[in-house]
Image (cartoon, rainbow, N blue to C red; front, side, top):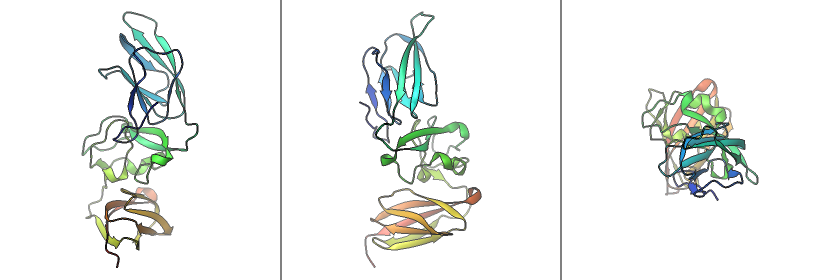
Length: 240
């Protein structure tokens, strides 16, 4: 059974030393390592549903992207015709959300381009407001990464550098208190570490912050037309 990998959501699970006749089943965001033996070439029918990577030294890595059915084709030795295996990506019993994941390893300082991200459906229980939703793709493109992002990992607002020349804004609030931020036209807000505080647009141009625990986090305000403002919010343990 697939499990979530520590860096975010996917873990590699060895299916077997040979392909089974039954379909290969995965959940969006998980990966499986299959060891077919003697594979010389592989192909996936619908790359929007699952990604295939034959460069792993131990076998073929399948990564589920969104719900659906596709076919994995494997050529062995000098065979001209491939073996075909059904791949089923299922979301039954889970609420999923559509987010952006990296299509390749992105080094620190990379400028995010359309080809660097793609849609993936992941469990809502594992998604925080710091993850970039597919519908917010236009806001994220063109920004530099402040941290390395591995292929297949979700894109995080907290890992993107704002394209603004001004110094970052800062605010300090105490645990249990409420803070407010003002930004004209704000329509969305993302929090780097939701365990420190949560945030919501409370009224036009105003964001309400509810301090939960001591710590420091980024808060990204997104406005109409792709405008953006970044804040560093410090939550202190002292209640005033």
